[in-house]
Image (tube, rainbow, N blue to C red; front, side, top):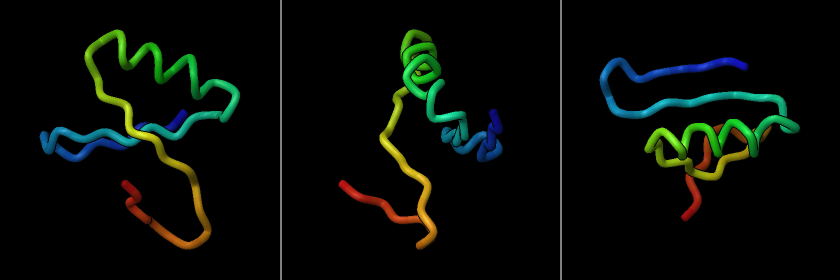
Length: 49
């Protein structure tokens, strides 16, 4: 697991083993953290709505 924060910016990026993704997302949500879907890409950062 690797966690990145935005210095009080209100965002957090957590990189986890794909097998642990659901468990970690559920733990975050149980603490009131909004989880947004994301995937790793070789094309850089892309935001999709």
